[in-house]
Structure formats: C-alpha cells, structure tokens
Amino acid sequence: MSEKELTNRCRQNDNIARRELYELYAGQMLSICCRYVGDRELAQDLLHDGFLKIYRSFDKFAYRGEGSLRAWMSKVMVNISLEYLRKREAVNGTIALDELPDTMVDESVEELSIVPQSVLMKFIEELPQGYRTVFNLFVLDEKSHKEIAELLGINEKSSASQLFRAKSVLAKKIKDYLDKQ
Image 1: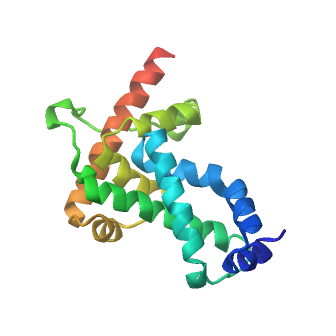
Image 2 (image 1 turned 60 degrees about the horizontal axis):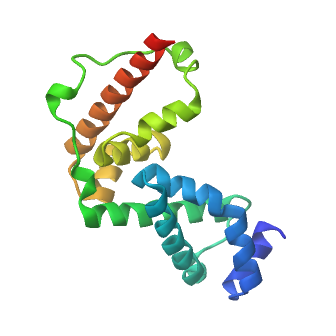
C-alpha cells in the first residue's frame, strides 16, 4: 500500500491501515522517543501516546508527497517527548562545571569515523537529560537556538550553554574511547 493510500485509509479510521502504519513506522518512531528520553520503557509509553495522537490527528495532516507522512509522524513523536520532558522539567538537568573538560576536544572527522555509530549513540544517551535534549534538537533535528528556546521554554543562552556542555562531555568521552583503542 502506498504512503498516500495508507494516509487516506487511516484518515477513515481503518484499523487494518492503522496496524500497517504502526508496523511500518514503530521502530523509527521508538528510536526518536529513545533519543530524547533515554529510557526504552518510557520511550515505549511515549510511542504509544504518540500513535494515539497520530490516529486522532489525521484530519490535520496534509499529504505533500512521499516521505511527508514519516516526517509528520516524527514531528509528533518529538513533540510528545518534549512535552513529557517539559512536564518533568528534565531539560534543566546539568553537570557541575568542574566535571567538564577544561577545553573542548576537537576531534577530526577522520578520528570520529573510527568510533562506531552505536558507541556515539550510547554516549549521547548517557548525557544528562537537558544536554541530550538540546543536542538532539540542534544537531539531529537542525533546530536553531531560538527554536529550541521556544520549544523548551528556556532562553537562547541556556540552549547554547547546554549544547556547548553536551559537546564538551561528548568530546571527552570520544577522546577517552579513542585513547583506549
């Protein structure tokens, strides 16, 4: 079934289409939730909530070509995750300044390519909630600090500060990893 047909059938509350939608996209959407909350069980709860919201909101979705359904669903999952974090005020989690490296380690792209993606994702998951959220929004979702500030209810300087600290922590973890290789 094409993405457009799947969209139309879901809009008509077709449960077979809803099941197919879930089976096609649940893995990708779970990854998005995990990226933000860092806990698989919690991410599964958010995934469930996100799909319920998606099923109820098809009347608001405008199909704009192949890939637009996945993009819209991804946005819903990010928003569900951010809403959860805002309610828990988790975006304020930080590391003490004395735990940060003195200087930013500037790893070359070549050195970074040595680090497996699974290891990099693990390092990102280990970041404090606030750092991880800002890092994900800025680096992976390509949001500006202004957009991040609006999404999280923080000021732009806090967003920039948390991104700097996230990068510092990640750089130290990457350096330590490379030193062990």
